[in-house]
Length: 271
Ligand code: PXP
Image (cartoon, rainbow, N blue to C red):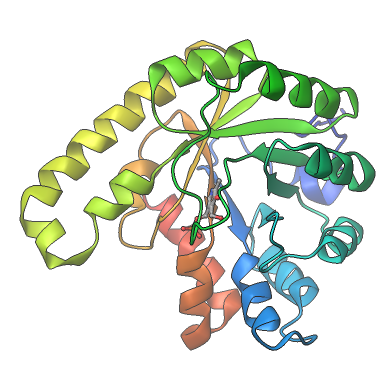
């Protein structure tokens, strides 16, 4: 029997062994910050390629990188090399621009996640406004899909944006968990009004995930997720994929990348 990945790609035997009906959500490790360290010195280490291989060997289901317009961490050549090396699933986050579209069509990652991008942001700030950029996003998605690339859109857990995501032809939505994550930081967040707000945000994410699934969209989530705050989201059955970076790479400084990835997989599975 042939088994196909969500992207439509036929899976080889060892990739098939990862598919299991009762499996928890998948973990794609975002390795941008390995490149952030390398770019701090504009040198060749640490190797993004070694990082990807270690993540895969530790059990990650995929590798995510964000090619930013300012190239502050991941470089074009990284995408080309990762495409050669990654054997699980390569997900490239990018803005819906002509330049990025051409890079995706040339390098053919398994998936592209469309994200908003503003030049001064420290990290991605909230989801893409699909309603406000409907025609451009629709046209970019069609070109990506025509090239056999699976398309996800990073959006806030907002029902109208989810409907729009369906309307532009996305196959997956990645729900932005930044607001939830913010509420889980610091003691004040844990004991004060943050705890209530975090609960409310989880409800909002759950409703959004249900709506997206009912519309036939695959549901992912990410941004600001940590070993400590993942459990409530891992318990949402509609969410089948997480993209997590900063917290895993931070922990890897102390315990090594292999161990840090394994611990996050365990945290996702514990729900
Ligand atoms: N998902 C998207 C769309 C992102 O832009 C990012 C950050 O690059 C992440 C997930 C990962 O966020 P974090 O590094 O906070 O885990």
